[in-house]
Image (tube, rainbow, N blue to C red; front, side, top):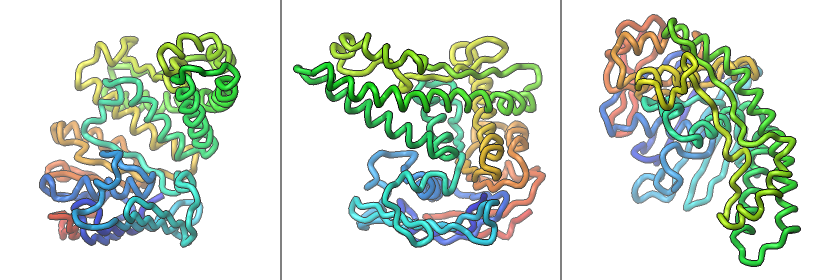
Length: 362
């Protein structure tokens, strides 16, 4: 899968940008605050209809404009002759999405049309921060690969919100809670089952990639469900009193986590910053291989200043774990990490939101 061309208008600092990307490596060079991250954010928004940096979509609109426009053509291995066109118009808070000219009724219909893996220099947050980071990791990747998972996730979140609202009412009735608990338990079965399979399938890829970078340390990952699917409904009933006191549901898939260890020791508590980066990177790159295995083509990799905190040699070693034959759109402040790059690439320079193709190609 690759993004053939991309257009953005009035998105953050980008006024009018039109680019045709290389099917392989694309390097965007530019100083800070020139639009590198905004370009990747715009592509991310076209893929998932949500921003990486803000929940307030008005912040994405260029100053003194009413909205923004994003367009892209995506080619997948399933149908190389017919690119999928995705258009997105955001005007005064209203968002319209079109795929091949047909308006989508739900945003969820967009998910999976252009699968992406987004990497940043602070990717170690995946293993060093709280469980919510790891749940989001599972949710984003599974939703792009499996529409049944996305349906169950949205259903579970909807039922969870309804139950939590009831828990905060002074005169909550048990039968009202039961209605939403049954729905939560049904959706939870899908979430728990698919998360368990996802981590099981991800594990060998992550271990192998980690071993390519550091051969004398063993990476282990495991799924930690907050509650088992066959006892979840009973757990909700048993915890009603406590949940009412707290005004929230304290058990369920919304409390799940991923266990990450090196040589048997929990990474979050005992690993160095360098070890955390390597572990998190191996897990994130393993998404690429698993997505290929499940969907028969690679996702698109977006990488924002991925190696800014690494020395050139280590950055090169990390980059070598990304498979050939995959589209990568990566940003950097300078060309240092490109000098010993052993693969073809197109280079672009961005300044004040304007993108120009450089003569420095490989």
